[in-house]
Length: 291
Image (cartoon, rainbow, N blue to C red; front, side, top):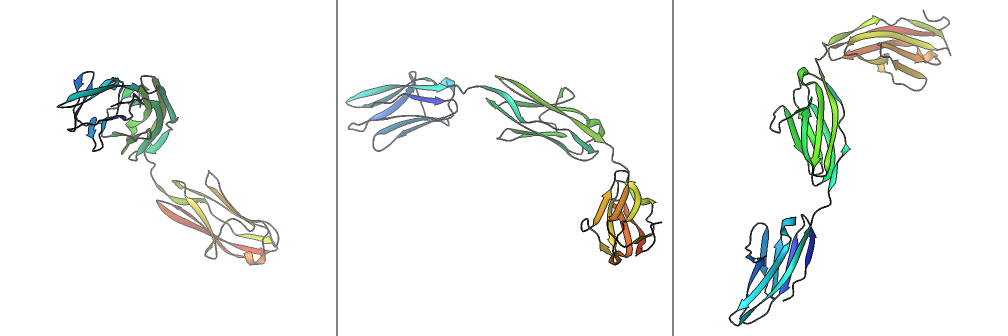
């Protein structure tokens, strides 16, 4: 009834196996260092019809390293075989962040999400901090989660201005510690202001082939989005048309080489969540310059 030595790495499943024969069929027992083993969530004991005897040790640890004995007996005698199970410890690896935290800037009432990804062996313990103070894992405002691939996440729901500060994630195991941090900036939302024109469009006259340009300046909070139209049809950049929107609210529509068919009524429309406003002016492709 030979049973071969078994070597596994911590966390793996170890299978010790031998084969018995005899009449009447022997009763088989397994022992660990002289102590009788019984089936459990960790240990499975099987006796197959062909005489194969199998002991399975699940989710092994270094403590499972020992001498095991398989003993078969019937009324005519008994026989046994000893085998060594060796469980090697996993190589340790200090924590390291594959993905680090990045700054989050939001308005009060919005949700802030911090996410990082850590590796290490054994699996690192994760802790979150705000301004050097550890965040409780049961905190319902700063909600923590973790995935099997090493991703760690901190979600701050309905963030408040007072939540602003430094957010840090710390990963630690017996091999070392690693940290990543990033700011959280929560500001009061801007009061929305409907668009208005600080400078309206003015009529333009050019000679055919000359540059025709309309310009306006719009203001509002948030800064309005601007669209251009000719005779009710929206204009897009390309085919000699250039559209510019500057940070100060200045907007320009440039026709690089005006043609007779470019004549018409032009309209600029400024829109933000608080409303919209338009300004209109005609383009004449004739013989005089812009005024």
